[in-house]
Length: 231
Image (cartoon, rainbow, N blue to C red):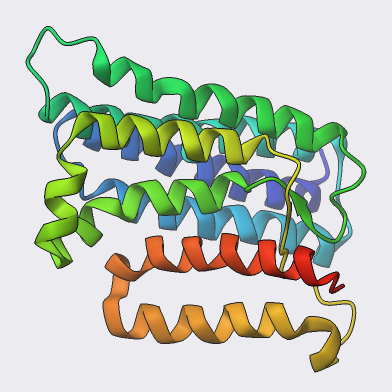
């Protein structure tokens, strides 16, 4: 066995591990903790690809393993967070929370589609699963920061609407910004630079409560970039 080739796979398995731990914590009622496990999993998700490219050990095995880990960390975990939020807002025998489970379903579909879609080399087609998971998992923090939004998020219908809108964005044909720079040119990357600066400013001011706003800005900037015909 080539040890070097297993380093990225180990990082991918750590992504999966923290996704599973996050699921356990959320099932035990620690909904706020879910965001931290999504962030940790996202860190390992970035590192596995970076290390694989650095060591030049990319493989089909690593690609498939990455998708399997992402289904748990960025599909099942955020779906469960929405489910538990909706469950806490409805009577015990309500069926409504189950309507939020469209998130893990379409997350899995998107990840399978991504593996086959050759158009996504320099930008995403549809919302990527880590961004969706970060949005969903940090919604409770946004609700704590602004009680008015917290009241809005206490409605199961609001949570169901969020689940379906963002699930459909996952499999949409909307081109989305990817932070993949072919050059450092400002004119060719102005939307990427704008997203980075905005993200840093919002996160510095609001911490986890700012992440949903960053993801909404990311979607908005992607739509504007497409509308203006920018590269």
